Image (cartoon, rainbow, N blue to C red; front, top):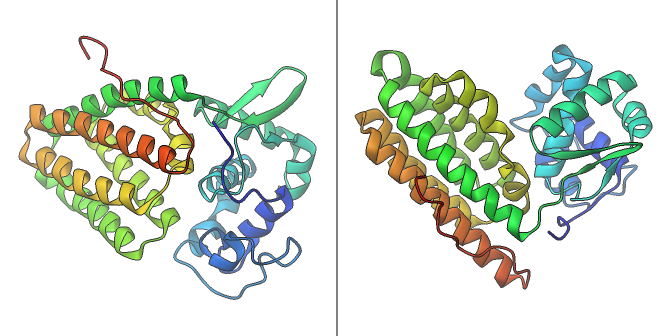
Length: 280
């Protein structure tokens, strides 16, 4: 798969994370309108600034882990880009062990590739692998929402689930890709909690949709997601296991198709629709 848009230097990533207004959602910083040595000097505050400030209490490796994920989502690192341990250690102000731990976590999530005797790199996904990812994510999302519908209890889950959906609606109205993506992940965390399956909670984040979602962002995809998630959540609340699962599967295919169209529009052929394997 080809590179992400707007590649910037590793130094900019760190400056963005230090931005008082959280440059990851600050347009001047994010779009590269400021030089590397000036990124992070804007004075705005964003809805995520407080959350970023809390990273210091979550461990040194977590700051690297979250920093790479959010830089990827912001389009600030690209597939194939090397993540040099010594540079990350200096730039994030952490020890090399913390960087190695972060790389292990990112590899487990399918975001980076680890190489023997070479630096880790942002994972690259070709057409066939992207289709394989959608095959797996379709089956797992169908299972997830079916389980959530079976386990749903209004007394225990209604407030949190409705809150996550309201956050997603607000993010859609906001229009920022980064804000919407974060709200979408929040919804999935709540649904995983409701489904209450420890093995699914362990393996679901490792499905390699993070690279695809970060690369192919558009208002059309947001519209598809907000439309489908509302239907999927409604089916969960109704306790309709079959419908919740079917809607989740249909949503996965709608996203696959939209990503393929997005790639074709930009003259970057990526995905072709494939029939799901029998029995899934």
